[in-house]
Image 1 (cartoon, rainbow, N blue to C red):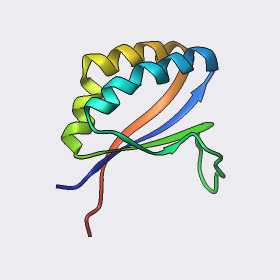
Image 2 (cartoon, rainbow, N blue to C red; image 1 turned 60 degrees about the vertical axis):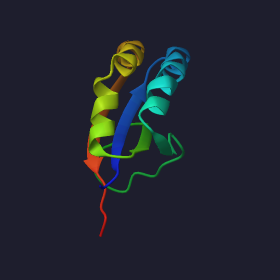
Image 3 (tube, rainbow, N blue to C red; image 1 turned 45 degrees about the vertical axis):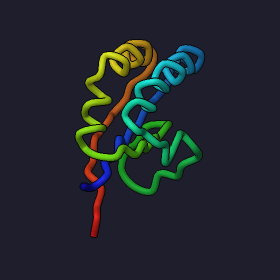
Length: 97
């Protein structure tokens, strides 16, 4: 079964409130086996458009990634993030080739 990834591009308008989101998302990420691959480090945009922050989170499966997103725990964390940020979030199946 291939792993899955959340690929998130986000602009944050209130870093203090966003820090509360990061604290709140720790429990659901642990519950669903998430592991950060990229967590907002420096980036260089080579083509197209992007947002200021990029995050890539690995999950054991597409099902785990989807279940995490829809979980009440993550939705509570997301409710903290939504008013202070704009995000694009994709769930992508990994390649096992």
